[in-house]
Length: 261
Image (cartoon, rainbow, N blue to C red; front, side, top):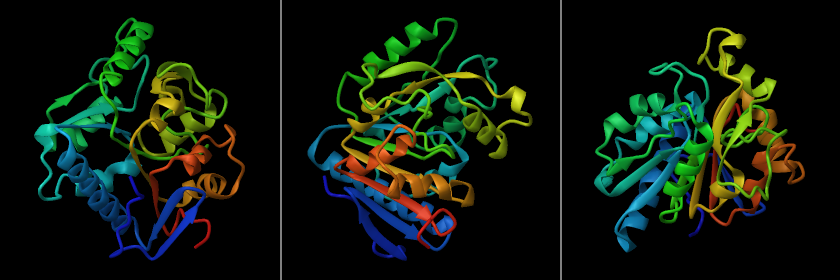
């Protein structure tokens, strides 16, 4: 599938490798453009197949895009199955920092999805990872909506644990300090010592098998990671750099995140 382009709001459009880059003047414009293109991707898939399967990141960086997405017209959410991208280990049941809970609040409660498969570690995270991998593997994943971390991670594939040839689809990872600090800076936790040290995450090969990837990255704290993604070597030192090799990935950034603005 060709890279998505929203010609109305983009102020800068370019290609870096196979990655389509769309830069916008504001965070609101970026989120709306990503939402319009995501809705159009859903419609395209549904025009030729019975259902769509999507993976969603849960993070404040995605809030504008998701809020605009559920407002888009003519999206048959009853034919869309959703999967959260990752989940912390060790949170108390019902903790507000849960990624499934965040997506419930910002997305899943706003549209009549066919199904939502939450990643629930419980007391047996290894078995939860295997179960989730089996659910993901029941049919192709059509669309992944993701972001990029301050350290260049995609999902929770931080540089120390990222593997472009990972044999697993879902795995337990230890979060690096930069990643955990970002959770405090984003306002998800009050103190660093409250941030879990481990999580379950989709691996990079599992993400890259999606038919379409829509990557939304706003804000000045992400500028260095976006610069490494676009202009550095393709390496696990910046896991997001691998997006330059995906055949249908579009990166949406605002002016503050754009290293070339």
